[in-house]
Every structure is written in structure tokens, then in C-alpha cells.
Image 1: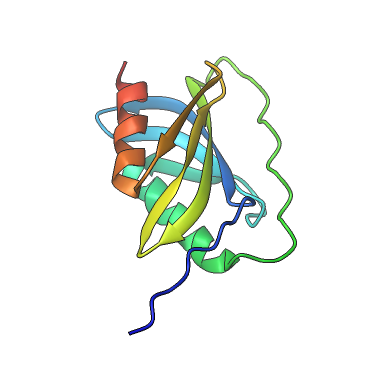
Image 2: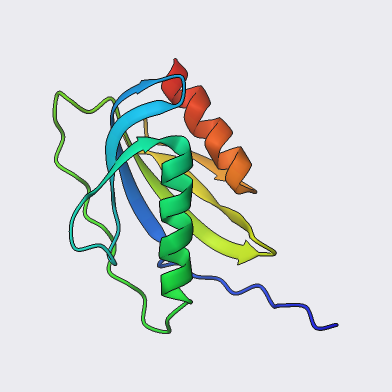
Length: 124
């Protein structure tokens, strides 16, 4: 049986702006180079599904996608994250979560770990 090889994709970056959060319910939006506009997000599950659909579309092009610009700061935002999915293997992700407001960078090894990190940060 052939095993898929792990392919790095440094262009896999999305910016998530969170305007409110309570028990997994959020109000915010996601920006990604493949989207023509900001995509509204209302839960962590919806965020993961949207990221998954964007990864499925990307299929690791040779030319990197342009980086998403930092969204303008505003009083309504409680957090801004850059989610960089560096590798995808066997339906799991490895990457970095960059919390721009606090200049903090954390590595995650799965989608579940990404959800846990976001929930811990936003629940505070």
C-alpha cells in the first residue's frame, strides 16, 4: 500500500479576527487569499471546516499565495490570529498559531489541538 508523502505548503495561512467569544460560540471572520471577501465565523467547528475546505482547494501550488494583510485594529476585536497550516498528512494538520495581539506563537500538531489552543486563549 502506498503512503501519501507529506508536502510543505508555507502559503497555507489564514487570518482569524475574533470579535466576541463565549463557550465555543464566536463572532468573527476569516480572511484567506482564496476568498474574495471576509467569511463570517460563528463557532470553532465552523472555523475548522472552512480551513479544511480551503486546504482542499489549494492542493499545494508551486507559486505561493499572497499573504493575507493584517486586518486593521479596532475596538470590536478581542483577538487576531494567524493560522499557518504547514503540513497536512493523514487528515491531520501541523502548523503554527500566531496570536498577533500578544506576539505569541504556538505550534499545534492536529486540528483538535488547534481548537483547544484557541478555546484556552479566548476563554480567558
